[in-house]
Image (cartoon, rainbow, N blue to C red; front, top):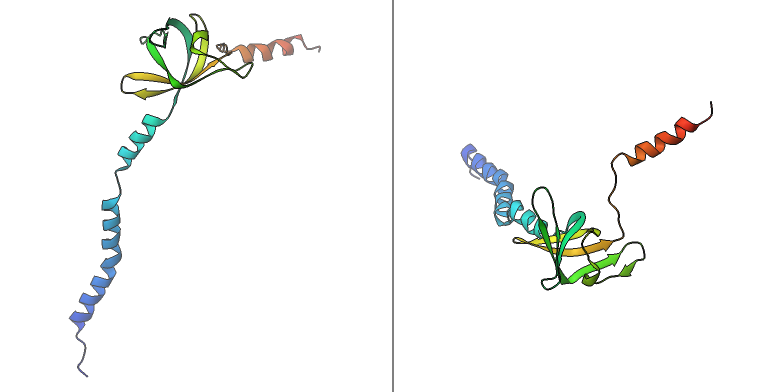
Length: 143
């Protein structure tokens, strides 16, 4: 038998030690970038909205919220779910009127805001109303 040389053993051990790292590098190269996957997920995810209707266009099936940053126009599609929260009954686009407070969600499609859901029956919350209501009974409590 010939003696095994030290350099050949070292070379073989280095090659074997590097195999897991080469396999991991190949797996990383095949996976898509997380930023691209997140952008696709965000595009399809409904975004919540609340507001009072400032205008309605029956022909285009749109309603508008007038806001400080500018108007937001929502398009009602055949897929939009319109519901009265109080009665749990389905509503139609014709029920949307100026001055009505609505909540719901929308999906962005380029510059278009497609209404995903529209909910009637909500009222705007008043900030601090819970604090004032809680403070009033304590003031009237007997000593």
